[in-house]
Length: 381
Image (cartoon, rainbow, N blue to C red):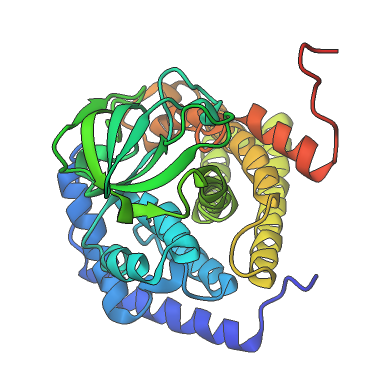
């Protein structure tokens, strides 16, 4: 597989780089990480600038290679990432683009691209854990509406979201992976209660969401009734396949900074530290090549990433944790300073082997769907 860029793609890179150089100085100062209403305003302002310049649709309505170049150049330039808009741009939007009706695409895609509407993800539940298909939030059909009762947890950006990509059980008697539907729920609907959750680093980008007889139109269902698990696999393929692309570039940039600090404070003289940094350099270079491979595969198969995204997600999660452990080793006692960005990033990295599907789940997917290994029989061996 040819992983090099074409002449046209390099020309696109040059235009993107020039635009970023002109546009980034126009942004106001970045708000405090804890001020999510201000962060929403900041993130959506940047999204509107992208929209006005014709770059907003790169998240799903452009060749995957151009999307890769956009993310690479944005990260290298220090441009804002999707921030509060990430569920809409990287999960819900691409899913609706792939699975929605023409009316649904007309209703939701443009506001996401303009930065007018923010989405959150209502998948996880307190009693389901990593077994997403064990969800129990009920949606009972009542004419042209679903009446929804249940609870979601780890709902990203629920406190500032306008819409929620919501998984519900529409047939409680069906087998576990059946009887599930994928809905778009307005967050201002009566019966929706949001309770923020504070993380280890002190931020509150997650929330519990309680649903008490919330009514959602049937027309807000993406895909057929009871076919939500298949639609969810499309969502998760985007989440695991391309949503972390910009973060790989960010990690490579952080690693270069770790090496610079190590040279400045004398830690570079330690051969163990040098070997660790060198191995991480090779690790992230390999992950970048894997990203290019996944994007090329998506481009060849209609834009939806394949199960190779699980390979990427599994290794990237671990590599990110190892990167910030190396940063802590280079910083020494300064690694305990909570005002340093690397300290917060190190704490945040602990969640990556859980978020977007735990590493154990990714190993199961790789074993069964890539390696063709049999599932464990019921009751064990």
